[in-house]
Image (tube, rainbow, N blue to C red; front, top):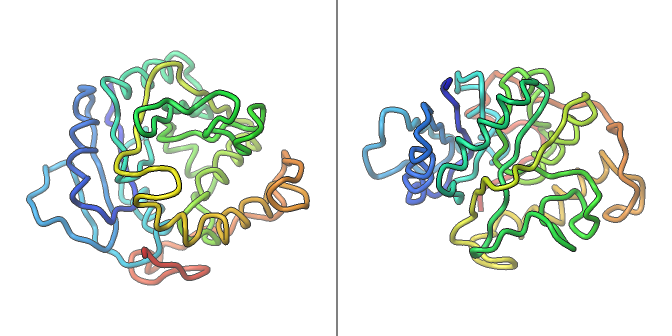
Length: 253
């Protein structure tokens, strides 16, 4: 099994070892890179890399990707843990498909409940439309695909950059698959509260509007979903990516 690079923006160092341990239990070869403003007050394992940065969360995510080396990658959040051997399960399905344009998603568990599917599935472009495009979470994908897509759009601040990217995967001719059993759980958070500070600040009022302006017809939030993006990607530059926020300004709190 090749090395899988996990990476993400991080503001909660107290949760990183929980994420790390949940990855390790799958028995895979991996590294984990976290980029964010808060340095951990403990010695991290050799394959847990921390880079300090005060740029906005989505830029931390893109910077983290550019630091990693693995040909297979999984973007993560620092409030997630993988359940049992879920990563090994996802890797097995990915290798069986053998297509670098395919992304294989974990299922989404919140408060102990798998809410990936159903009448109002959490993992869809419109959560009230079960037939709308899949919105993967912690998907296994190829490094090549992320690079071919151009990475994250700098117009986002904190959220929905990922759904924009998955929509670009579909536009590019790729496929998103939801694994039948492999699960990732969001911890320490509840719907409408908990640690959803970034969602409350940027979710519906800014980032979701950017997403919908790129992929739907008016009215914003309920319009028809398009197969083609409405405007070209605005990627991040390598220059000063860890020190100077690019595009619209954003912050962690």
